[in-house]
Length: 239
Image 1: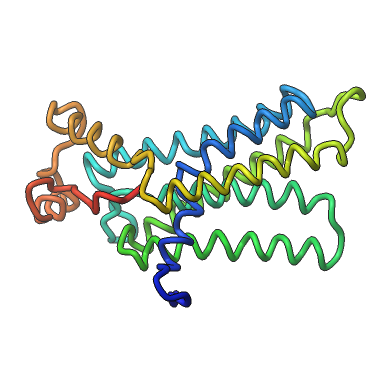
Image 2 (image 1 turned 135 degrees about the vertical axis):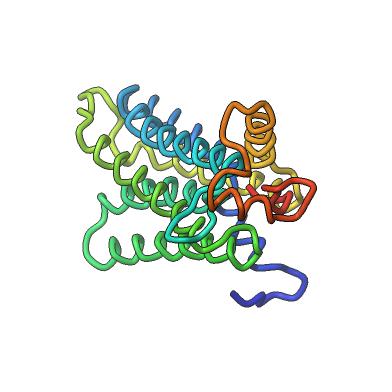
């Protein structure tokens, strides 16, 4: 990915689109919008698959940081949260909006969403924050969460008293505008650093012998050969 604008790292700007500092507040705002304008069930149908997907990803990160995982002969430490969250959030929103469009407009929207999600994944590799397998695992988890959210949304009955689609336009625009200050926070370096907390938790579990140690099996050998002081340490800005 080429940095087209002088003084601006395009890869850093694009990768910020998958940062939890941006997507967690936007997800909460969207859930609130669905609750108020549709129903509590509609909000839950959005939030539950997202929460399950991200929870599963967090569990894999803990296992990866503590024990390492071998996928097709490749050591996987931390499946990409940016890729997973980006695929889940943008994929779900894109399919929700696309359901109201027809023809080329729908295809153009879905293609744009796919390009954004893929671009975020590419930047994670380009910035040396993740390996290709880690990004692919994240994309798979996020895509599954998005499909599950759409499936559950389609089965939620919309109450007769709920607002019509046009009545959601302004609140939806407000949610979109919320992304502007959040992106500014991410670009200025103010992030949640979720990965650091997950890694610290996993290393504590390993140190207390709650989970596997780095000297067990073929994967353990690879982990033991990683640079000190933290056998599983990864770049500190990884999220």
